Length: 387
Image (cartoon, rainbow, N blue to C red):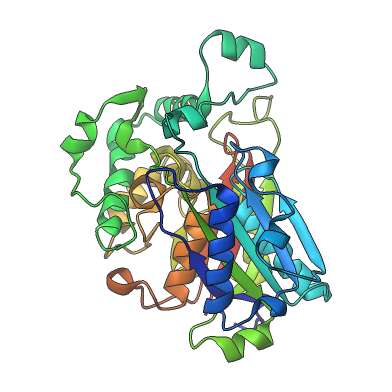
């Protein structure tokens, strides 16, 4: 295989990930930025780009462009706030890579921070925002249709009905995530999980139970994306970016589409795989955006690892947990690791590629698929990373 990396992640910074409120998102971001720059072996004056990923549940003041000043960054040639729902963090790395390739910048910090756990309020309240389908916001709100979980429960219900599957398939995903989380010191939930444990957890919106849903935390994650020459000198185990793609199908509740279960992931995969000179068979591991267990089933199918409706069979036969043929969400993902939106997948991929994953470290990492999506699985972005 003859290919050249486009860029590389040379540093990562993570604040403590907490289940309570301490300081504002921008303050957490400043801390993570400093950690990432130090980890890359750089100084603040070496950074010439900053891409900010604001959480969609917070307003712009939580992560403003003034973050440049708060973080002590000067004379930047690239500065932007990227707002593409859950695909934003992947898109910041893509934009950083394009800037490096074009000569606009050489060393770009990409940062995400969020504080969904606020004083006197639960994370569920923070995420209880309307997600309208087909523009029918009024109808949905009038009928109590709030938050991502309602939207993804509809997708899960349709998936199980169309393919004649059961909630055992959702449980298999949650259990695999928990097995990985037990190997990750950073993971928030490590208690062993069985099928019975999953089915005993309460419904939140049927068919999704509590154990099918992400575990939100407050914190910040930042990475430094550098040109390839810098990367070669900076890290023994570089985290190269070889390919990238996006897919945005628009409203799939129209004739010719499969509503809720057909996504833009296939488009993102085609572009990213072609750019990286790989096929789906070359992928060694995946870090999926998996805010709900149904997401992993649909991602496995849309990214081409199996046929539609066959993800559960793929998991049973190939395995996605520790020791499986296709390791997926090796830090526990959103369900058992930590929900930092698109930064969760990025952070775990970088730790794996930098050989810092400790007891869960994978040996073969020529090609790792790292993804993000937002909305009702509407907005997709993907990276092919490797050493």
